[in-house]
Image (tube, rainbow, N blue to C red; front, side, top):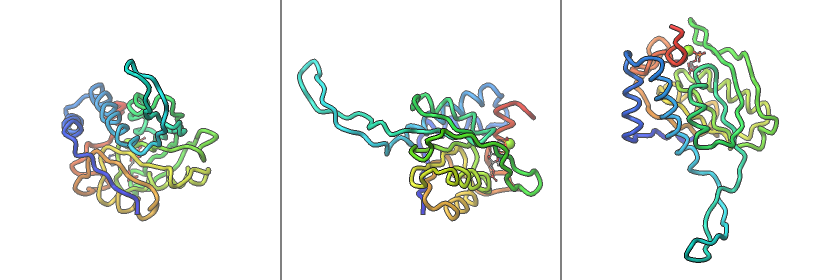
Length: 210
Ligand SMILES: O=P(O)(O)OC[C@H]1O[C@H](OP(=O)(O)OP(=O)(O)O)[C@H](O)[C@@H]1O
Ligand SMILES: O=c1cc[nH]c(=O)[nH]1
Ligand SMILES: [Mg+2]
């Protein structure tokens, strides 16, 4: 079973409160989503491998740690996942970026895939898949199916979101038990396919489409 990590950090809780508020405008919503993504990237990078390197400080020779150079990829689920990409890249600027286009049917909430473009060496990369919302879990499950089908190593995939519903966590863990989930918050339940209390439609709020 994949791990679920919920980030109960005060900075994250404070920023989430800002974007949950229905009066938060597009510009601030976008900025704060990226700020939270940056904080989540910090946590997501916790298990990156490091290696010893010998350096000289002004005081003399020592052995110190550096990143071992594992290849990384950030993979947003379009559209709303795009809102988290810059924040992730602030911390891991050398990562490649893949895209998976996915939309939910407004009545059935079934996901539909409309675009997939990944780095050609995705099989060798640690993948951080990003999407602000994990609701029924359908979009995340299908997006992970898509990257596994194209060679991604299941052990190298982490799913990173802002708000998760218990229903989505359960479905994602059942479908992809090898994928760890990092969420800024675990909310109460789903109401008509939307997370309660949640923050509404993340894509529409990020791009001002409603
Ligand atoms: O867990 P699920 O029930 O699948 O719901 C979550 C999905 O819904 C939203 O995307 P949406 O379909 O609204 O597309 P958008 O990002 O283009 O707005 C969200 O960004 C997730 O991708
Ligand atoms: O609450 C939700 C559920 C799915 N997609 C969103 O953008 N918000
Ligand atoms: Mg949407």
